[in-house]
Amino acid sequence: MRVRVDTDLCTGHALCAAQAPDVYVLDELGYNCTGTAEVPPELEDRARRGALCCPEGAITIED
Amino acid sequence: MTAHEPVREPVVDFDHYRHRSIGESDRAWRALRERCPVAWTEANGGHWVVAGYDEVAAAFRDWETFSSRRTDPEVCSLSVGNLRVPPLYPEELDPPEWYPLRRVLSEVLSPNAVARLAPRIEHWVTFFVDQFIERGSCELAAELTCRVPAAVVLELLGFPPADWERIQRAFHGIAAYDRTKPEFVAAAADIGWVSRRVAEEMAERRRAPRDDAMSFIAAYEYEGVRIAPEDAEAVVLLTIGGGVDTTTSVSSAALLHLARHPDDRRRLLDDPAAIDGAIEEFLRVYPPARTHARTAVRDTELGGCRVTSGDRVLLSEVSANHDEHAFPDADRFVIDRFPNRHVAFGMGIHRCPGSHLARAQFKVMLQQVLERMPDYTVRDDDVVEYPNWSSIGGWARLRAEFTSGPRRLPPSAPQRGAPDPV
Image (cartoon, rainbow over all chains, first blue to last red; front, side, top):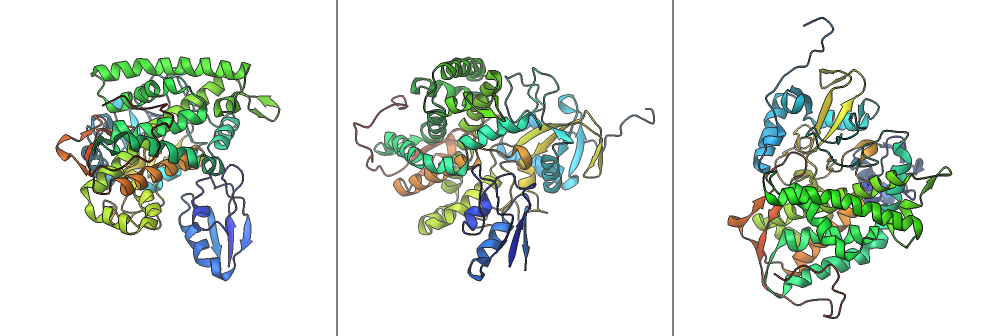
């Protein structure tokens, strides 16, 4: 599974990283700077939860 | 009417300044939302009211169409109430001017900065609970939910503690009292005093920087250009205005909710890990900022309505948060609702940069009340709501009783910011 973060849509709510700190990387202002990342199987659930709670819909899950 | 006259419909009889209680406000927004997601009202000089989740979110995100820049330099763009206050930057700016001022505020209030503030948040919550914990009674708004955000934000900025109470009372007063009450008149006059104090403190920081956020803001440079003094002051004023009475509102709402809903309180006492989900649900159901205004700067379509350049547009966070299309069983408080993509902090580029600090303070206040006074009750016959739920909602009085407990800080702890003796 991969996550793809649209940094143009991210406005720094930082809720993704609260759900999955080992998947989503925040910059020094709290904006998601993950870009595209492979997710190890044991973190998939957390990654999904992080994507689901993004108010801006900035995170896409690619299975 | 000529062929070029804008068609503004559907027209509704709707004035959110008439909402005198949370119940009245919630019912009015629901009735409007069930009829149409977007409508025109002739109230307040005429403006669109946007009630649907999708429409509110779309307008918040589209800053190129829905501008937050002032059209009259004297009048705040963020409400439709003709409010004459000094500028609040970066919220009342669009890109590109918005960016450097947003950046400085985001640095001051970033998740990492808030993590570094955790001991100060813990300290101030402990300190203020200490002031009433032995008494077995308190007024939760005046003695806790107003106090903590003021102490945390004003200490972070670097305001002298002697100013904290007056600043906090000014921002609480303009929201908590009716426009006809002497408390409101005094508070409104005091906002001018706050603005002058900001100018004085910032001039001092430019001369002699200290280790505080006001110094950081005063000296901020972006792409080699130093922040203009008046812009820096507008950022500080927004930080105070955004920080002082807003976290107060949702914290009061949560404490009242838990007093009235023993099952939800039991759940949080039995399962402390449920608090993070509960915080989001409190924010959804009881958003402190009920509405924000924008100005259309080009013709567009929103929710099937034809919005014309120049039209004022009122976006309702509270209505979006209660929209059944976005939240199943939206009027019910569901403590572990997930996902919960509420718009309590707004969306898009002006999303509240203080959201991380707000959540952190709100959480510690809830935790300490649940730990230290788990049996508290609120005198429901003496609850006083703000008299106006148009822009900011909240509670002016929440008297609580509980089994008294011990202080945590030694009596010799610094007493700065201490409340008046009650």
